[in-house]
Image 1: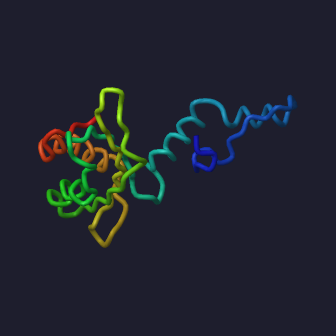
Image 2: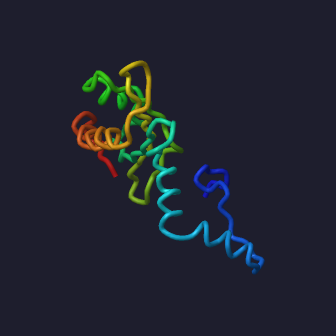
Length: 143
């Protein structure tokens, strides 16, 4: 867990048993606090562009897929959208020899200059990407 993550800011579990500490735990607990942390994690109401991850099984005998090729799958089909792709971590090889790579997709709207795309629209484009990847890169499949 990243201790510096924004959604964990101010989140702590006190060891001292006092009225003040109990009030702190009470504010951090419950459905409302959990929904607030979840919303921050998914950028639904924040200024950052939506970022969604995807893990792919790579085609055999090939390296990782290029970020540009993955971004072009969406950018070439949707004029008002810009997608930036970056690799997350290293290539993982499982016990059977299959290799996978994770990618992070950042979605933005080009209408009126580069601006924030709604999370639901980014999610819709991400689902479309899940369907396009196996067709565009033979041997690749979404995990």
